[in-house]
Image (cartoon, rainbow, N blue to C red):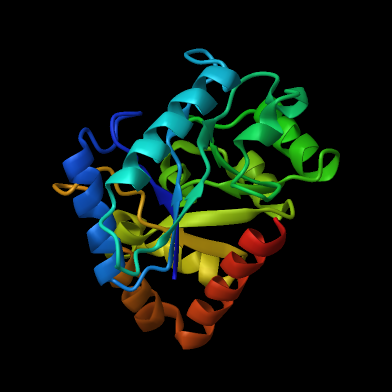
Length: 234
């Protein structure tokens, strides 16, 4: 079990706001059987430099790991980022530093508005020219903004992966689009997109159960296998 989207590091973004909350979230991941948690704090190019972001992430990771109790089989913590789209991202030289640890996979958050041809072409450049494994973060959340589905359809024709939030399986307004991804046999991975222990806690176990109910065990096994390949090879 891999949680590909987690704002679990303390005090680095709008996720966990304390060490105690981070530890509680990590414990909940452990109790649900999660083996790897990809820590994906937000990266906004207009707010932070890559070097500054990496320094803050490393400091947060180091402090967090130092506080983990010894003698327990906690999940592996894997460093990553949720990179928000910015103009020029296709040719941004330092982008590889924001990939998931030891891979060429990047979790990309796209604009919450109707996508333009420019957005499409920059993502295409990342996939086809720079050979990144692009993972569209919480892809189901963008659908309602795409009034004209032409760019949406062409985006999803690219050889990329989509990440679906576990909570979306139980959200009525998102069920149809979530189901469609599995019916179309797209490359899907799961993430909790957890931010805290309140309204957005780690919930990967629940999402996995609902995936099986909707699409069957074979769909879950395919998702797990894809996740393992991404972490192994990018």
